Image (cartoon, rainbow, N blue to C red; front, side, top):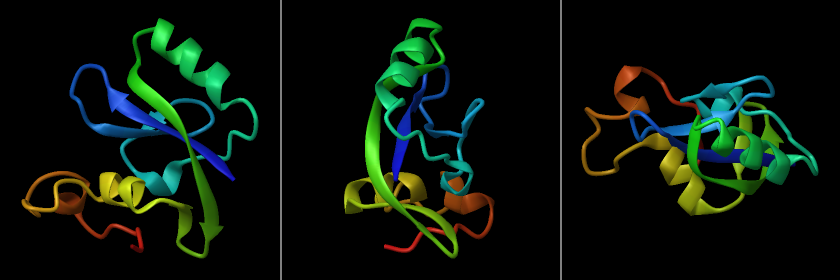
Length: 96
């Protein structure tokens, strides 16, 4: 599984490609197969994402899970301020 992540150009939030747009929630991420680089190029040119890249992942019962710990941590938000980021809004389904 391949998923695309980057940062929202306006807010700096970590975002994930859903197949038709962007979401702040990893659970919404879609498998892009071999189209990841083309999606990044198109979305970067449209100024919708900054610093996008393709991530290896796997589908779990809780949804997509990035293979690398760095991207799993990015999905959770700041690890030193649990009152900020996605985790502050409610349950986050990312297993480290």
